[in-house]
Image (cartoon, rainbow, N blue to C red; front, side, top):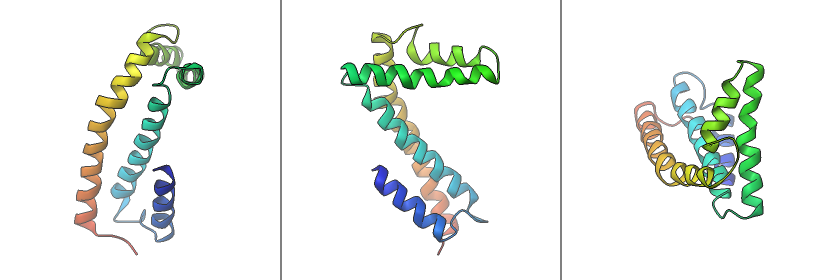
Length: 125
């Protein structure tokens, strides 16, 4: 999936598909790329073995860097993602819910938008 995504983004970039009037189509495509990576990140932790535990620990620690920009925001995001101060069963439940409920609905909505924009503006190149 990720390889197909990289190949598609490369083709769109090389044919200038991000230029006017297709900026919104490009932005929706970037959102689809972020959603694809999010599926991988949340799905990687679902087996809940040592690899999954430490992956969840690392992924949920990344937003703490936001504390450098806005005091306390990073910690709040980490607590929201983990469901507490440490990685545990609540984190697994949240990742499962995000992976199976939230991401598919958001992906379908953005994919629909992407296709509507493609039909309206046409394909570049």
